Length: 272
Image 1 (tube, rainbow, N blue to C red):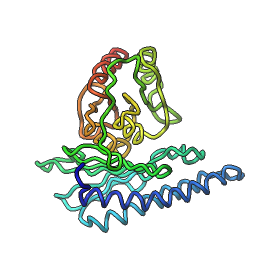
Image 2: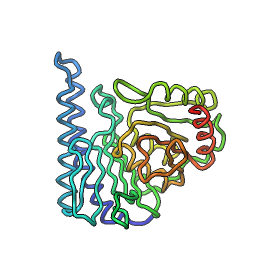
Image 3: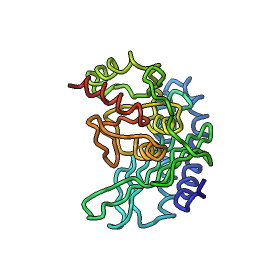
Image 4: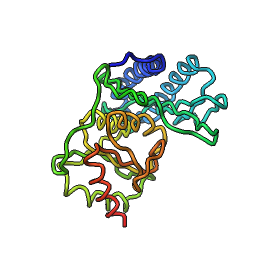
């Protein structure tokens, strides 16, 4: 495997530092489940603290870069510099309920050469603090779990495939759209899973644990890192119309090469 570049090392250190605090806070939130007030305020503070750690660490390493933060919004950097796209706690609801399935997601997005906006994500890291898994990738250099090269699964048949998704919930998502897609895909596959953290769904797809993933109504920080992981592991990431935006967030369909076209055919037919 290629040695981690300085950029990946910076991301790794920042994620681990924020992740250690999330692990401590997660231990506390489990105890708060029995309190009358409940843990919601505590989790909000944990989210904000993790974001602050990431911001401080990455700003120190690259002081002229910008940020797109889930909590803090957009913070401009110098005009010709990239930006960090960060979700400090993807899977907040899982965290809130004491479910150990959440992650830190960091992507690096470059500016378009013509200066007209933001281009491709060229570095990515998804860190799962509870089991200390670090998924990372750089454009044209592959995707890795620690020091192990990742490849999307080799499954070719729908009836063998396990598909991940995110379901609509209070104030988020289109129930009618999701139901149409689910009704088209579910009878054809071995199973559908909803684990509640899109960055990890995509990281697990890159690692071959899932064979496909779809969701809509996400944000850039949900999929910036995971999308690059899938692409660098040999998979395809598009929107529901088959286009390949730099960050597929409003609509995302991801899978290995054999299953993406089959899933897209079912999805497109369901939405006609």
